[in-house]
Every structure is written in structure tokens, then in C-alpha cells.
Image (cartoon, rainbow, N blue to C red; front, top):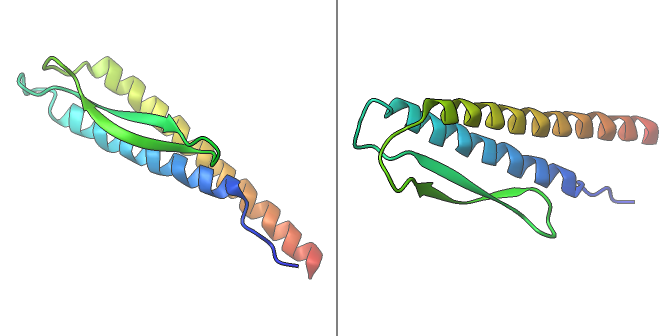
Length: 105
């Protein structure tokens, strides 16, 4: 009987990818915070309907220059939570598959 990798893995992997993009965009914003002409960017995340998970649908640039470091700190917290939750989901799935394989052996 074949065992399929659950869709949960794909959804979690998309979450890890989205968190990575959030980290990158936030790092760029913080690195350019001292440049008065720099306009902050923001990753736009959308739900992958039917597939589960999240997709980065684009990167938007703020209409006015400037970087709010408070907003960037909040973005780091969100990215960290997103990454941690999806990494834990993958870890639990790995443990469950390991238990299943042990039971089948």
C-alpha cells in the first residue's frame, strides 16, 4: 500500500518560504532605514485556496519614503512566528511518519 506525503508538508513548506521572504524584505528595509529617499517594501501574502499554505503574491513599495522601525520589528516577530509554527508542523509530521514506519516494520 503506497504512502503519500500529506498536503500538510507542502503547506508548511510554503509557510517557511513566505517567512524567508518576510525576513529578506524586513532586512532590506532596516538596512536602508537611514536613507531618507528609500521607501519601505512589504511582502504581500495570499492564501493558496484548495492547496493549503500561503504564497508570496508580490512585493509592494510604500507610496512615501521612509521606514518605520516599529513596523519592521513587528514584521520580524510575525516572520519568526510563521517560521516557527511551520517548522514545528514539519517536525511533528516527521515524528508521525516515523512512528507509522515503525508500526509497519
